[in-house]
Picture 1 (cartoon, rainbow, N blue to C red):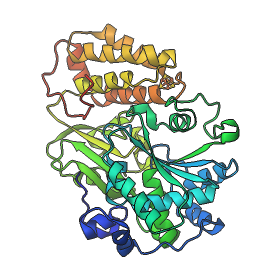
Picture 2 (tube, rainbow, N blue to C red):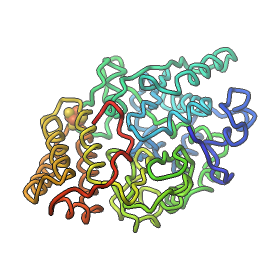
Picture 3 (tube, rainbow, N blue to C red):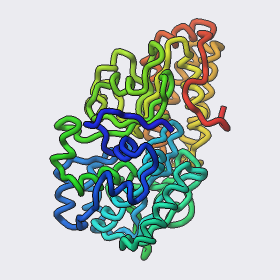
Picture 4 (cartoon, protein in one colour):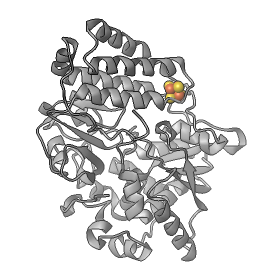
Length: 419
Ligand code: SF4
């Protein structure tokens, strides 16, 4: 794992790494961040609200509003969502691997604010962060910090496992499947078992720092509308792929530059496999939800994948679409049948063996799938493919008019067990 940012102004979540150069145990964590002498009360909730902190898992919901909402339902569990089903993301595992106490403290505070009685740290099978989290929990128990009962829960290593309702369902029933919800702003409850408050790993680490330093300090990085820093996992055509911390609202190109661009780019996949491609003309846009909106993009899971000139974008998109089709939870027809059909059309186009009729059929299939799944998984695929058809229109034309482009394939880190 590469963890780098030498600029102190944006070194917050990664501060212990910058100072210690290794994983922070409890003593190292305290040496860098100091003790946490804050109560989980209305004052803290007000500070979080004034900070403008939003969820860093992809949804971007205001954190204080979510805590308020769930407090009324008294969730039995506070779930730290570190399942990181997004294949190109490493930020949550990295955070828990190098400074687990920052996240665990944030989880304790959030659980206290929402009235939860226990904390679960949800890691996917084989997570690189498992030992670090287990050690940190044991260390906190041994030092009698008075934490709420805290345990690790291992979730299936699937893309969809980290979806909020799927994680809630898994913790309550053992089934890692998304739940059909009439409104995403109403918590799903399970009789006497209550409900689960799911918070992203990075969000909780920010919360812990806001509790220490207050909302004004949090807003001293980022922009007025998009305060704080963001963790970003950068891969593709860069010299140093890894996890970086950047000020919200910094130009997209400068954020990518943290990893050292290694080639001229044909496009960038922003947000993750369910995100959007943007063109090199968009590198000056601010890296934030509102800043990326003109390009139809969103920071999402904090993923940036740089596609170099000379790679075949259509083949890359087809690989991602095939993977996403294989990760359907198998509950909804448009997702189960539509995503493999979309992937097949993309494969035909990438191979240069399909013409305008297949392209028209692909666009029709995208329209038929959009908005018709029980969760947002198929919508993410539709968004990613549509953005690729726009950004790589010239490549698409070359493929449709006969023959492939002969470009390199294999830039996007699609899991090895998938096509
Ligand atoms: S849309 Fe797909 S992933 Fe979502 S619930 Fe339906 S089948 Fe599962």
